[in-house]
Image (tube, rainbow, N blue to C red; front, side, top):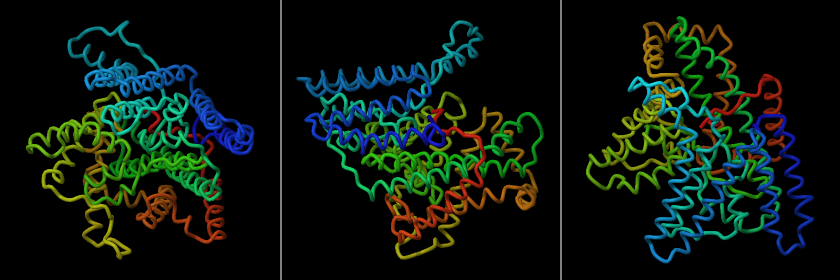
Length: 487
């Protein structure tokens, strides 16, 4: 069930009304009120997830049960060694399931090609369960945090199932930690009108990014990337497609996160921020602190720091950085393009780490409305580096990427690109992109919510109406899936 589908437009209001105004009142006098509230969340989440394929429910239920049981056994273990055994059994089980569904066929094909062996009868050709990478990492962090003593295992299996399957963030994150999300299922939620309205505005902003930017860019991007290896495409078209894809993938993924965070607010749940204006970053290191925050913080806490981080020798730091980005690339999919994409960003990330520069949390110095020329130059250069990475990310193979870059970097591409921009229908897409960038620049110092939250009520309603009007006028009838659903 897609967030931008008719089914979800029907599903969400029904679940919301039942949750707060029917089911909640029915159980208000029950001594098992909290557990019944969580049961309703689990049932709703399983309906949402099973809408794609009911067989997916068996896998997520199995993962949830094993992770919950492992947590209880780890917490009750009499010795550190036994606790470590239970933790590793759950890690191996979860990673084994993920590897089987996501990487088995890839490695079989690569092994067969290396040794010139047939693959007949060896390939599984199974459907990749939606969101398996996200909820698997969520389950893993729970087991590890219990072993480290950061959290206590919960004996409430219903609350744990709700933690793993909570439908707003189930299929594309944010990847939540048990320390943040699980306690919210262990206490009763109360309806808050202001929070719910904030959630509705954030959902609307997410739909703006998904429907007006991501979906409108998708057709042009898909056409160019499909045709460039099959026919001759002008360099100007290739450059524009690369730029559009950079904004498409951001609008698509951050739009999903906005809808997920906003939907969670409707049910009294606060999810973690997953994006923090990444295209305003001044270097690649800063970019990765602002892009897909929940994934990169996961790798930092459970891979990079345990390996030693940057506390050892420079060689060890280099190895640790490459391990993290290699795993990040593999997390995205079983393709050499993702692996090389991860290594590419590792190489870009290294200079900042090795030079020991302090992290920059503010995009611009306090008190400045606009960035300086130097900062603007740094942002532009960083965006260009990231753009080449997105071409690799989107390409079908390494050879396609090389060919794409060679044709895109021909002489005269920028001049032809300008003419194409003026004479084609690209500029309306860029108008929506500019609106998005301006709005996000205005809210760059806000941790949550939108600029609209601080406006006068009548002005908020006018702007929301204008966004709805734009969505109605400039959205096609095709329901585009979210890019990160494939991961």
